Amino acid sequence: MNERRALHESIAGAAVLGTLAVVWGIAAQSRVLLFDGAFILLGIVLSALSLMAARAAADVPSARFPFGKAAVTPLAIAVQGVALLGTLLYAGVDAVAVITAGGADVEPGTVLAYGLVTMTCSYALARWLTHRAPDSELVAAEVAQWRAGALLSLVFAAGGGLALALSSVGDVVRYVDPVLVLVACLVLLPIPLRLLRAAGLELLEAEPPAEVRRVLADAVTSVRTEFGLPEPFVRSTKLGSRLYVEVDFVVPDGAWDVTGEDRVRRALIGRLEPLGYDLWANVELTADPELAR
Image (tube, rainbow, N blue to C red; front, top):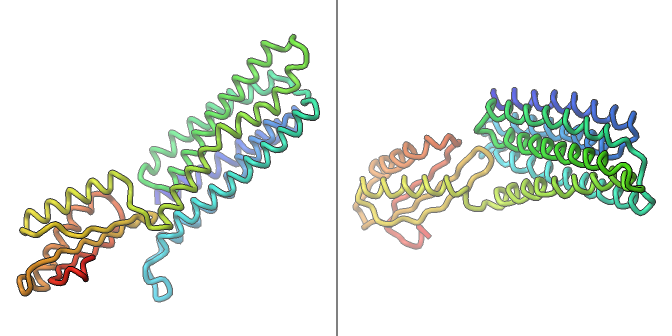
């Protein structure tokens, strides 16, 4: 519930700031403000996508989707990454075209004022969303965008201030607007790349984050000690809010029964539940090493 509420609030904040940026950019004839407004309004579409993904991921498993729809979370994050990367590439090409055409006339004081206003708003919203749903990956993606927006606004403010200081030096001011767009693209570029990397790793069923691996290793060691079991084969991966764990122990023939295996499974699950994931754990005790590998 907190996750969805936070996503709704992110959408509302983006609508206000995006509209402000577009109107301000049109009035000031500033490409950098229009780019920022378009970037923020794109965030509304991506936030709506995150909201739909959160609803789908929360659906219970069904006959058609026996493992649920947890994969929709990294899929939505990947779409966010692609959309943001495409926007940055387009803006970068347009800025280069403006520079080669001789720049553009923009009032640097407008850029400075806009940067200060949006930096304050973006940073405040990022902090608010962090407290709203601290454990949500979808909200974390939103927070990353708002923090980047705050940093970007700081760049705008600094660029506007520098342009004011250099306003008496030839035609330097004419290049401030497109150069700031290029700087913004470079500042924001790590965000879509990071989103695409994280989503790709999850969709390819890579190992979970280091903290999860550490807790899993500690849990397995504790269970081994409690039940006197040998070193197992351990496999794990994370898909959205779901954590898949498979632990296979090779034991002497006839030494364990189903009831004993269930005790081991419950002991492991109990140690992993504090992680807060939707846990799908499979623990097997087998006498055949080939089945464990």
